[in-house]
Length: 351
Image 1: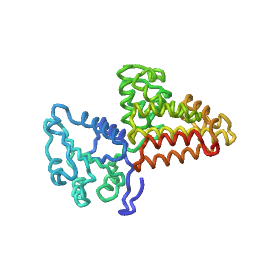
Image 2 (image 1 turned 30 degrees about the vertical axis):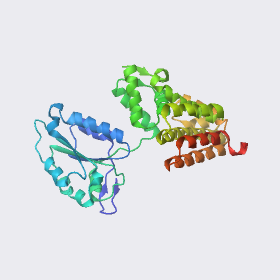
Image 3 (image 1 turned 90 degrees about the vertical axis):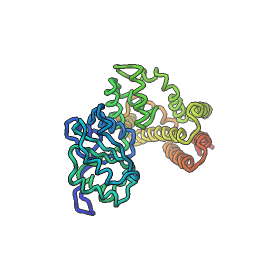
Image 4 (image 1 turned 45 degrees about the vertical axis):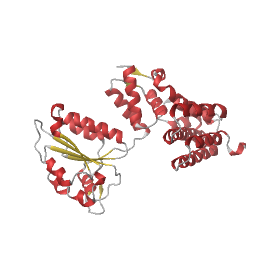
């Protein structure tokens, strides 16, 4: 907990989606929450779970409403909050676009938060992540703010394994890491791939081999190939793979940025491996620095580090960040990437 400088009130820690779902399962669901944060896919999945478990399907038309900030007044929302549930113990109001209300409009909700209707749950959803203002701070003070923040790599593994278990799959750690590497950290994409796995291998144990066998992943292996060829300074093969990626994934900025993200991640891992070796720990020291990555990922990084000097890796990261900036400011992603591949494969000291 921390104390607000503005009001001297104690600010509670943000809740997680798991906290909210646990309260729901225990029948201790609060009468209002604020959902916010950048991980919108997980927010929507959590919201769907709440809708399903709080309001029976047969009476959803009467007891579930979605309203939008800027389209309805605070008073209209409060009026609906006071309606009696129809053939159900609860009503659920979802207020999207909370950030579209003016500061004065948001403050009209404060008296209700002091004396809410127990049979109604209001979930305010905000695209704002900087929770300033009396309205937002009130959720913090009451411990009702739920932050759907980006997960760390380790948290993504745990999240992925939980979702797989819900789909009746048993995915081992190496397979989880493999999916992460070929798909990335976007939860929507990760969930999509494990859902495909659940259709192909229902009620099964999933390892790396099962993932490789799934044809829907075939186009993603070329991303691994690209990283491998760049790491080995194999320019001809790297350019060929890059062309294949353009053919399968397109040449739009989002595809180019995704490739840059994977390249940057692998370069950082190789740098971490080299740093571990350099600091006198030898191979065991490098392995320690790369944990908790699975063994096959660690071995790949150790094999690739011999192709690079430490300063080259740092230059490579700077070049990748520069390329990211160029694409985000309107430069053509395919041309930027092609130039980047040549830069990475032919460092300055070899020119």
